[in-house]
Image 1 (cartoon, rainbow, N blue to C red):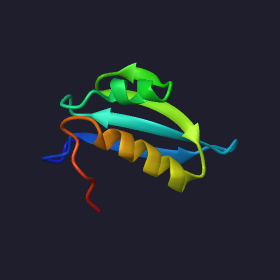
Image 2 (cartoon, rainbow, N blue to C red):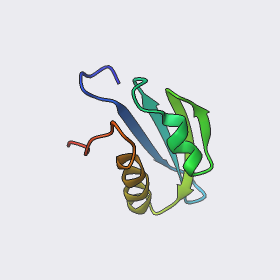
Image 3 (tube, rainbow, N blue to C red):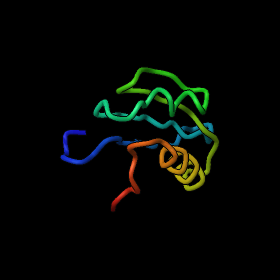
Length: 78
């Protein structure tokens, strides 16, 4: 979040039950809670979380694509 130009950071963690935990951190420009709420998650504008079904590759695609629909979010860079 502290890197210039970064509006939103996503952290993905595979859980033992096969679910994928996703933590969203925002610099305040993007509403992380609004994104998490789309998946039944919660939190607040700058820090939220959610869980989705795996595998992790599918979870990454699903959540990143949802984030790209939010105004102010740009295509991720490597």
